[in-house]
Length: 105
Image (cartoon, rainbow, N blue to C red; front, side):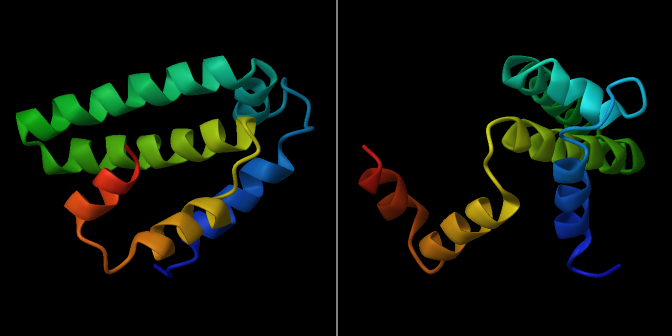
């Protein structure tokens, strides 16, 4: 698997923004607005947490994929791109997590 899988997924999600909600799950989520996209992301994150606690590797992997997809949908609903997030991660690279968190308060 190549490193650009998330980039392709993000591009697909962006392309579905104006699609018919009856023809695409992504378009349906986006049509319901950012709040629904955030709610769905939260639900998927909780499901991933449950599987992490249970210790089922395959189920956790599947739930983690759902989390990443729904994160990208939530970001798209607020016009935040994956590139925006990657730029922020690059900005933080090499910093201590403790130092970085302190800079936000």
